[in-house]
Image 1 (cartoon, rainbow, N blue to C red):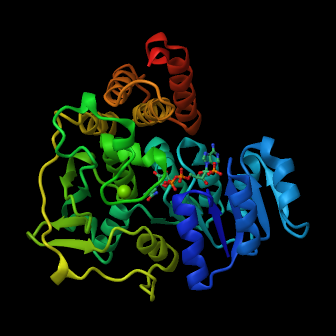
Image 2 (tube, rainbow, N blue to C red):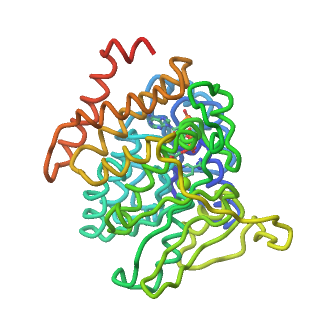
Amino acid sequence: MLTVLGSTGSIGINTLQVAEHLGLPVYAITGNTKIAELAAQAVRYRVQEVVIADPAGYAQLRRLVPAHIRVEAGSQALSAVASAPAVTAVMTAIVGAAGLPATLAAVRAAKRVCIANKEPLVMAGGLIMAEARRCGAVIVPVDSEHSAMFQCLEGHHPDEVAELILTSSGGPFRTVMDLSAVTRDQALTHPTWKMGPKITIDSATLMNKSLEIIEARWLFDIEAKRIRVLVHPQSVVHSMVSYRDGSVLAQLGLPDMQVPIQYALTWPKHVPGQVAAPDFARMANLTFEDPDRVRFPSLDIGYHAADVGGVVPAVMNAANELAVAAYLAGHGCFTDIFRVVGDAVEHAPTVVDPTLADIIAADHETRARLNTDQEFRKK
Ligand code: NDP
Ligand code: MG
């Protein structure tokens, strides 16, 4: 049985549709603010438990959900449904650092952990992967690029790999020279993918690629300098693995998250799905170019955070979450996001081999500092 953490979001909704298609029963679903949607999902997918992360929504959810379905609230309840004995697979589709405790709970309970929620991996990927090995959890990536690399790496030894090639659509501003003039609506209109608001902004700043470099670094145990970002505007080649003999394996598909979501649930098998394969004869062209690291300083910030390690990726992630939330709330301009995240990373403390407590402290301190920072509040 499946638990879907963050079922009311973009990945969550797609996961429930894929589960229905596969005939996979859903044990539990979780949401945060969309109470009516969550209640409707609970009925439609005949779940046994439904959890609302924000306890303020409990009473309303309880009223909307039939009595035979268990209703819980709060962070511990999220971890409980991620580790319940009846559950075999967990889809992590909460957005941001908020998903860290439940991700760890699923890993420690040795589930198949289908990871869409990349931020916990960015913050604490070393610890999460070590816990997975210790507890026998199987981690299967859902992020389309990582699903692609995961597939291209299957059956090969890490020594055979020259580099991972992480593709990026380039976002809506790939060809826009002056990023200080772009609008929020433009930033929220992604050229190829339909996603939740936070990752849509991350895709426009290319911060999403920086998060993905670190995500790949931990998932595939490879140094960031051997992960190359390549802009591919059509989003058909989802990523590639370059082998040492000059051979490159790529995974291709239409830009539809149902494909990597389904593969994470059915791995190691490819079973019939609801998305067609690309029709290559109807495709005008597939093009590739290097990213512009001057216009998008987010990439250098990401490589730096990956290189230094310690708590720096957690600081980068927390600053980005706050900067994006402020931007989405109507504050500041697009390029402020680069400035805020860059400053936070520059001033991040050095912690060698951080514990989970160190990482969580760095996350909290970054949020607290930015929330009291006059410059940031002015944004
Ligand atoms: P959405 O914003 O669409 O959905 C986020 C989900 O998380 C919702 O169910 C939301 O609940 C819930 N949520 C939000 N805040 C909290 C919180 N504090 N505690 C508990 N639950 C919370 O995001 P996406 O589906 O786009 O993305 C989810 C994750 O997957 C992100 O980490 C993203 O980077 C990653 N991802 C997404 C892709 C995509 O195509 N969308 C592609 C690859 C990765 P509610 O809606 O009820 O408030
Ligand atoms: Mg991705």
